[in-house]
Image (cartoon, rainbow, N blue to C red):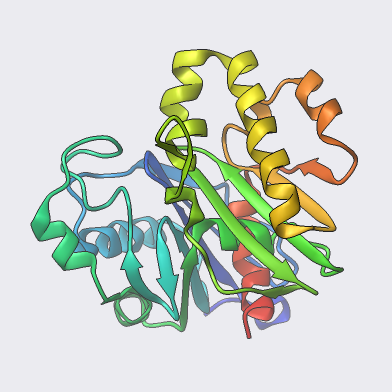
Length: 255
């Protein structure tokens, strides 16, 4: 069993469209092993994701509980919809009806808890990311830029119900996911893509009236300094590692 002096130890798993990262952290949020990463396997029914997590956990130090962040609409640990894991070979590949059916109403939290034999918390990946960075003061919006666009909203440090507005149209018939997701960043280059990021953020400002916005995810570091300067002092770029570190704090921000 883990050393009770630093307990509870948390297995934190950040599941993305292209890769899955995991580590074990103590109660203070200190990593007790370097974060490991494996490519996201496809096709990916729920059972395969659970087994992938279990295999990664077996190579890490012992833990008392598990936090899993994954893309999509997750309510009380149950998957309402997930965008990438219903495809044949990953983002922008063909959607398989049998995977849509397998993931719909899947109690991922129960599956993870049962397989790992510890209490589990399953949230949207941007929500876990946000748990690692929010200050707990005022209205704070977290935007993660990776395969697509993730989001999480906190009010006074408490997690608000998740909204998948990233699938709403933003311009030219493109959704937010498509407009600022990784394929468009790779196609346009960082400078033009960064201007799109600014357009998205400024367009959301009158909707949320936030006190602070945190930009995270693997592509947040690609936003050009010029665009960051123009976004204002209420916009902060945070490390992508927050998706792991947030696995500890998520247990106190969601209760």
